[in-house]
Length: 546
Image (cartoon, rainbow, N blue to C red; front, side, top):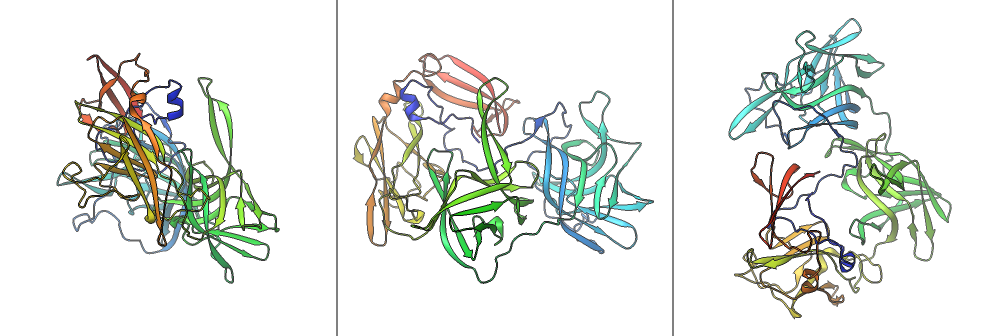
């Protein structure tokens, strides 16, 4: 995410602060939502490892156990632990992991093998332990993975680690060079102190590790698609973070007094959320297991959720959301729709609020593509044109529904832009990536430079000192073309509003990491923001990007 404040244009008219636009032409990324990312610790890893991605194993990596060992396999286990992971600014974060997917093997010779022992890194490799009495000892170090860095290959190991004397870092425990587990009726539980840490070959800690590890068989059963149910296409609409409604295609089936909802996302793997239907309402008891989500490495569950407003540490009101064990929909037979004032959550794990998808005030309507007038676009941010930069930028949110609340086929949606009241055609050489002159811009179009797409937000850059910019949505479906109103932003009025800097205007904004290297605005971790104002004064501040 970026260290930007999105403009709420209505609020700006009342005199709120001017937002700073993202760094020019930097690419946008989408991260998995993490309501509880953990808490910073005072630990400083000696061998920081940012965004680790194991390399493909080669013949010389024979010490790494990559193939599933022979024996009794307990697959797709439900794992939990307390874990550390390293942040880009050199600090270790501590968090709780719940519902991660693992596996273990027990052979006939008293050996145990654990897959993916470091919860924050999926290596798909194993470590080996042996049963001595009633305790399983995993001797360390054991080689776990190899990474490639600028053409060289670096091996990484797991160690049993303890805090150093001044408690600023973890170091290998030279007296107890093993991690101990016990097997309680098929559930493996760590009983030794210290962490199972990831290190370099010399034992330097990378910032990753787990303790209080529990590995249990997954006993929950997902509801597979039942036979004899006539599923019909539906759209689930919900409140998004842009102040509009989003939609996702899904399927709804009814059989007797049973209600089934599936296909909200690929991670559901064809499994269903089920409820009881009495002709007026649908009652859904939660949680419901939706199967292993191998893409993200978590067991996926459906929950309801409730929100409440409570003061934070500074006394300001803040919304808090909690998992709930029930969700209900009201049924309207006139249009076969289902509505709820609650929140439907697809959660990673079943004990902590760590959502993959959240649908606030979900509504289910039968899906039948049809022509319709698209709703208006909504402006969300802008960057004023400056001679120094030679460009400006505008952000707006696409509609996903027509004015009649019908879902729009996104491939049939376009937009026109009006610069100072004139319909504009994008073409070379000014827009260098546009192959053919383009007036109707496809809503799905992005070149990562002049046109940038993120979720429903579109960013378009412009190259002259404009007074107004207008956006009009165009919907072309089944031989019919319909258009929204033209929504217009007066840039001169926006630029005339005083901002939080006492009336000074920001000319440029640059970002640096703690080593002084210039980075993009979306660089994760702690960065230094440098702002140059139109009176040549400079302001610097530290910010943290999640």
